[in-house]
Image 1 (cartoon, rainbow, N blue to C red):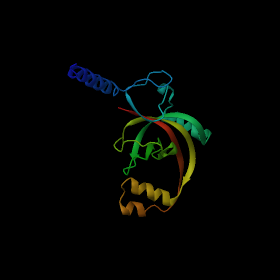
Image 2 (tube, rainbow, N blue to C red):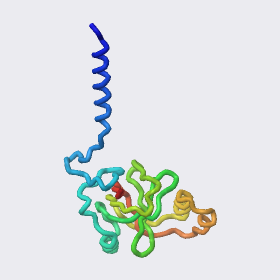
Image 3 (cartoon, rainbow, N blue to C red):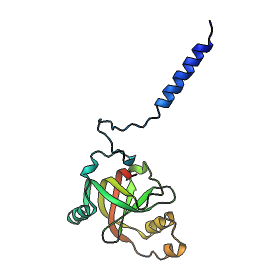
Image 4 (tube, rainbow, N blue to C red):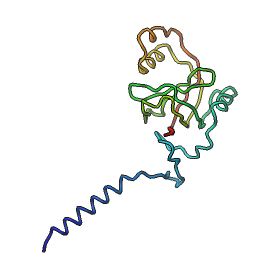
Length: 168
């Protein structure tokens, strides 16, 4: 028995199976199609069309400073340059909202400043301590003078994201 043809077919079969396994799925576990114009981090976001605008979000936060489940469309102002473990979202009043990721379970790319995103999770108002603000400034690559100029805590909107969709 000549084993070479058998080994050739077996090797070819493994190669084809391995190559086929790298195809990216475009469906969620529930079977709904994903919007391929976005890259996803954390939980996959379904029904991106239900995301509220920044203006609607800010109105909602004025009425209720703790929103458990919301999906928001916004632009990224800044990302942690250490590892992508937080980002700031531009608000309409010129301020930013700090976005962290649920259970520290995922990070986002460090080069997405200026990109449009959709985030899903919990929004709330909180006070950020001077020490934490200085830590974020270090992560963002601010100068020592900029870090030293932080002397007061900041009250503002915060967001704990369970998932992020970044427009490609």
